[in-house]
Length: 634
Image 1 (cartoon, helix red, strand yellow):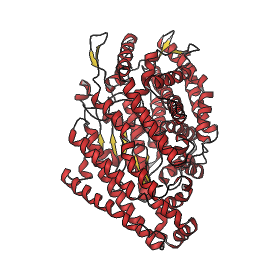
Image 2 (cartoon, one colour):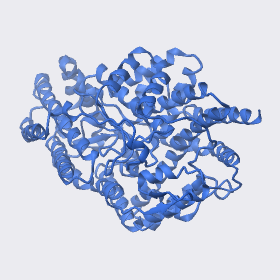
Image 3 (cartoon, one colour):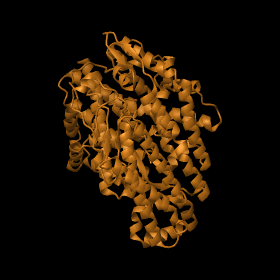
């Protein structure tokens, strides 16, 4: 999910999600590349004329936004004048922000269609510089508001109803006071954002456009190119030797870039450490959580409960090995379906029909928005050379509609991703309808709940409508895979992120081999390597270099909190509590009108600092395995 922050806090533009388009569900790294089967299926491409009729119109809008950005500092020294003046200034900044995001979105989507196109790369570079300039041009606002004082700001809010869309952000300025610099310091940090964001861009260019991917011959004589799309497809190969070949070759290719990718990720980490120190946070994790006013107990509770749930994860791995007929499970045995089932081809047409049926319990308002979205040209559906990997929704253009990028492979995983991303799209539509621009943007913390609950409802729909025992086992198995990928895998990623940032904060070096060692130790602990549950070959610990989310600043742990929250909602919803469905939709409609943890508490009574929020996933996994073992015993 990509959606830029709808205003500035403490003088910098904060990203809620990311600004590069590398979201997928879960983030395993699926990517572009065209297969023969896909060449024959129906393909969808988004219509960017909904944003601008052509490149020339974009250039005109870009120039206009630049002028508006350059003019914003004229408001310096006026914020404490009176309520009417404060409203006028914030409306000007908000309007500039809205226009800038529309310009950004066009450039971002054009680039992601084919990252090999130099003109698109240059356009995106220009818009990145524009966003950095916008942050710099507004960097004086927080220091000046702090000088005006919280009492006077609150009096302005009460005196001027027009300030209502801005009240949350204005009050947040006071909350951010301990981490806000003076005007000169804020301007300096804002001006540095473009340079500090380059590691992510370097990673993207390597992963999607620069690494020469190897070709291998499978056991049936098929030659396949192991780029990211090829790896994502063939890691599921039914032949075990083929899977080993795919893993050994793909991770061997990444191993050749261990030092360079290590330097790139280290640059990302050092940038984050610099930013946290400059703002006087205890660390990068604390800075990340404070931005959305998330209690630190959320992170520690997640890690504690996931580690407590590892026996359930290991139970699943043992069941996987048993069903695959493998005595000693290896890492390359993670991805193939645990049972063969004739599920058919999930092309776009069938994916649309099934998703619509699966999400019917959400009600007509939700389905009407889904119908509108699927009827528009909002999607870029299939892989192609140079296209951005993974899948995402970008809702940056408040006055238009969200755009959906997929790399649809016409398989069940693609159907699941389809439902996931359209969950994001409907969330955006609901929030935009219910909230003004300034409060529509929602946190990643709630964003992934909207998408993951769609996957859970899809799973139960497919299980209920399975025609054979084998098909039912297949869909039950995919339910376990969602929990593995979003609950255990993402928390493992989160522990890796925390470990490397804590190391950097202590001044310890982060080279490629060091990162491989840290990641490998976590990989082995989570998968029960020492207990003999699943063996990890050392070369597979290179996986850290492949994960784009490590360039997004403690993004990944929120997949785990999200599947926890989504499962907590779904558990009650599927037990017949329709009120919890309405509560959940109210959470989506709340957008960014309050901090995400507070929204969950007030709208739905969900407290993410408590163990039960996370234990729902473990309960669901055990329930699914109970169902599977009962079927196997028949």
